[in-house]
Amino acid sequence: MDILKAEIAKKRKLLEERNILDASKKYFKRGELLAKEKEEYFKKYGPKEIEKGNDAVRSSDEKHENESEQNDNLCLPRAEVIKRLRERCHPITLFGESELQSFRRLRRIEIQEPEANKGLRNDFQEAMDKVDQAYLDEFLALGTQTDIEKQQKEDALDDSITYDAIQEMAKTIGQGDRNHDMNVIMTLLQFLLKLWGQQLNSATAQEKTSTKHKMARATYTQTQVYLKPLTRKLKKKNLPEDICDSLMEITRHLLERNYIM
Image (cartoon, rainbow, N blue to C red; front, side, top):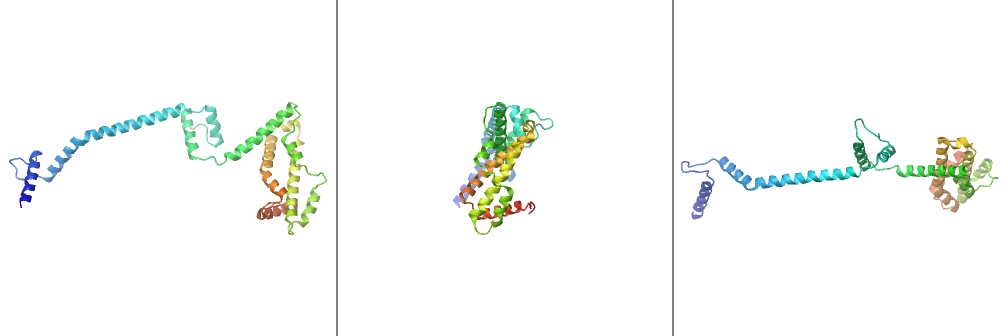
C-alpha cells in the first residue's frame, strides 16, 4: 500500500513540475501530457538533430558538387568523345545537348554497356593497319613483301595441287583414316586461301587504293589469323573428332558445290 501511495505521489509531483495539473484542477487530459512530453523532447533533442541533419545534407551536396567539378575537369577531348560514341553506334549529339552533356552521356554508356564487340573491332582495325602499311611500303619501293605474299610463301602449296586433285583425294574421305581426312581438309583450306590471295594480288594499282579492296584485303588477313589455330591442329593431326567430323562434312559439300545444307 505504501508503494502504491509513493508511486501516486511521484506521478502527481511530475505533473505539477510540467504545469499540467494546477490547484484548480483535480484531473488532466492524457493528450495534454503527451503534448508536453513531445514539447520537452524537441526542446532537448530537436534543434541539435536538425542541425546535424542539415550539416550532413550540406556536406553531401558539397561532396557531389566537388566530384562533379573534378569529373568535368577530366573531360575528354571532343574528338575522342565523338570517336567513342561512333564506335558504340550512338548519336554524337542529341537535340539541345552541349559538349559537356555529350561527354557525361558517354560516361553513362561506357558504364552501362560492356564492349562486347571490342575484340572483333580491334582485330579488323589491326588488319586494316597492316594493309595500309603494306601499301605504304610498296609505294615507297622498300622492297618489302606484303603480308599476303609472306603468308603464301609460308603456307606454300604445291602448284600440282588442283581443284580436281583435291576432289580425287576426297573420294576416300570419311572411311576411318583420320589423318587422311585432316589432310584433305587442310589441303582444301590452303587451296582456297591461295586462290583468294592471288585474286587480291592481281588487282590493279588503282583498285588497290580503293576502300573496297582494302577492306577485302583486311578481311583476308584477319581470316588468316583466325585460321592459324585450326591449321596448326590439322598439321599436327590432333584435331578433336567432333570438329573433324563437322569440317569433313563441310568439305564434302564444298567440293560438291552444295552450298545450301
